[in-house]
Amino acid sequence: MGGIPAVKVDEKIRVSEIFGPTIQGEGALIGVPTVFVRTGGCDYRCRWCDSLHAVDSEYRESWKAFTSQEVIDEISRLSGGVPLMVSLSGGNPAIQPLGGLIELGHAKGYRFALETQGSVARRWFADLDLLVLSPKPPSSGMETDWGLLQDCRNAAQGTDTILKVVVFDEADYAYAREVAKRHHDLPMYLQPGNHTPPPPDDDKAVVDQNGIDERMRWLVDRVTADKWFEARVLPQLHVMLWGNKRGV
Image 1 (cartoon, rainbow, N blue to C red):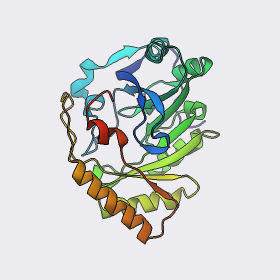
Image 2 (image 1 turned 180 degrees about the horizontal axis):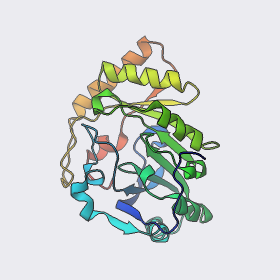
Image 3 (image 1 turned 60 degrees about the horizontal axis):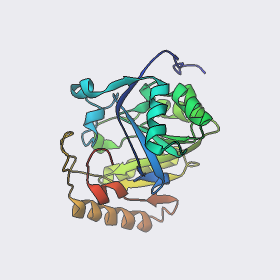
Image 4 (image 1 turned 90 degrees about the vertical axis):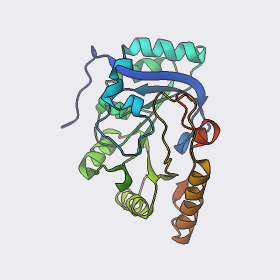
């Protein structure tokens, strides 16, 4: 597939953290028991990033290099050997060599969902059980390359694919409408922005839940007023329960 990096089997995966099982807190799999593999490194620097410990090179010394087998072994240990959903997140997990991990996990009955902004397409997207494309709106300070986003869709042929857009304001909402227009055949999930990310090492992370709830109500009203009935508006359940605490 032209323009898409091939997987090198001898490469190691940079991992920020592996944790769970806990529930998936957002998107199409909200509430599903999940083990999370958060990779280290990202090609974006969003203004409101809530996982800088997995993004900024300042924290790269805390990331560990694992083989695919080592990651599967840890997933199996955490899950007690019982196959379940595995969420591949970051940072941007698409910059990591995850094809071998997915292959090993599938052989043991695990399922894999990956969330990415859609800036790097990989051949192994076609092996995922779910691909979440979450292009970043204007409030992030990033610009979307629509061609690269389409490349990610093309790479995921045969894989269930959804869209998820974080919305902070009217400009973000208009952006979400544009994403949905360009990819009208994909389910769209809207998520109110979490505007109070804590320092990455803060174990007592709190958020302004009242502010997030207010944004959620505004977003629900906006969608219904526009009769955008195809969109699904969901909160971040894990933030409601634990704030921005790491490892949940």
